[in-house]
Image 1 (tube, one colour):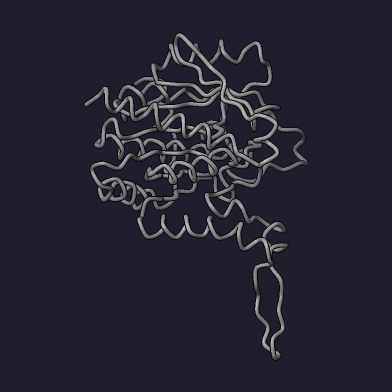
Image 2: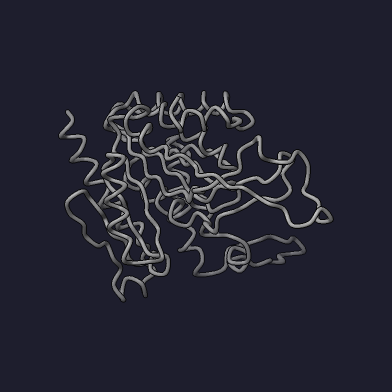
Length: 309
């Protein structure tokens, strides 16, 4: 068996996996023959350090790019499978997280009857988001599938990809999740919580096999596959993106630098690249770069589909 096959054999499927797999298949089957479907992965994976997990290695990703992009794909007419880290940002609700949402509301006492209302100008902010959410709910174009661990993510990625294989070129994979490069094999984990009185633990991490190759070549070979590359060193960005394209043979890498990722990305192809950016006015107007990314990708996906027909 290859490295990724051995790796998969060592992983435990998430709770309710067979039911989730059924939902993924049914979601793809009930979309109209003209509907494009995109798998958006979002948020970071955890790496458990014990079987009965108390401690784990985490990723900083909050799911900002994935959740925003899912909304824009829905706005562009796609059906969306949103595979996301549990408790990370989600489409639509991301606008109203925590205190920000509470500050939009006010308590009103009318004839000794308390009610909650949306404050003044916030109505205009809520209205289009609620309208789009309700349209998506009616149309059944959004399926949300949560994960927590690296193992969960890998099982769900494969199941979602294989569900999409039947629709051929109408499928897009937008792999925005921050997936760990390292993990602790199951047979190297202690069963119970590591005890501090035993002294500092020695933890041996192993490389996670890259699954882009089987994904592109076997699981969903006709899909338009887009991966992301995040770096902190500008000198490595294009070089490593091109290496990934050459190695895995997918369509596009969206490359970004940690400090500038919210207003500048680079679309990298095997022989060319170009920037997608926000200018100062767009930043001041709270335009999200994901709107530009998705608009560009939707056009490229249409061209790809046309070339496959």
